[in-house]
Length: 384
Image 1: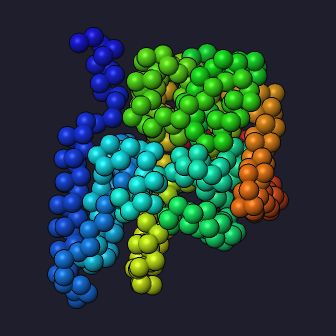
Image 2: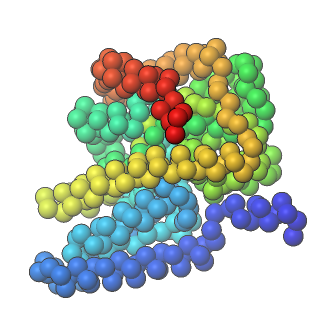
């Protein structure tokens, strides 16, 4: 086996056998923890637990995302006091990574852990419940969803497909991605083939590039085969795990396309409607807790991974030139606004989202934006 082949084997997603082994281990751990909880507290339900199947869009072992799906399943098993037991399945074990929404809506699977922009072929409004180019950051996205009317619009959209979804994670502002050449002018996008999901793909198309949406376990193979010239996947935490620095040399920041990517926990709507208030609150509360854990995971590990990535590879991140950023911004606003033309629900989603973005921009300009600018201008540790 060549060194390149060995690298490719290491970088690809874990095998189905390994994934199945991990899932069985999770179920055993969840059962043990549930039993311990039953001994420590009065039993609420002594009958057999209701088994729910959770399909993940992330391959086993993927930092931050697969970890989040695992943590969520474990917490439901524990906190439900034996009423529910989650069986976690990785992509391909029951359904493909991008097939989880269809499967849950049809009742073939009970639950999913995914990102809503993977379902934009059904309605482009789904993008707004993950992220849109030049859109809300993770805290802002959470605020709009919970307190700005976003959840009601999300529920209305998902009801068309017999699904109920809840926010359960956030990655923060993402990197611009890895490229096989420098991006110095807008002309450098011409003919480029890049792995990029969501509305960002439509922005790239307007810039002369071709965007393709690939699941996590298909990216490294596509780079080896030369079928894509560039890719992105969140930031340093996952980039280091994929080994993108071994395959591409231009690492661009910031990412225009995903400023506040939100992960989602989806449930079959008939199942959701059958739950009593206590169990609905159970799932919502656990998703709220996981939203915090998932976001902290990415914020903490991106910083650690960036130091390691730069030290080991020698790659230096390249700032996107202002004129390129400005053109991407202009096209991004046009693409985002165009969703309002799709149908009445699309119009209401865009209007709600844009109104909230304007609202937080005003407050952010005199708080976060100013604070980060001033904090960044001072080296607080120069004398240490």
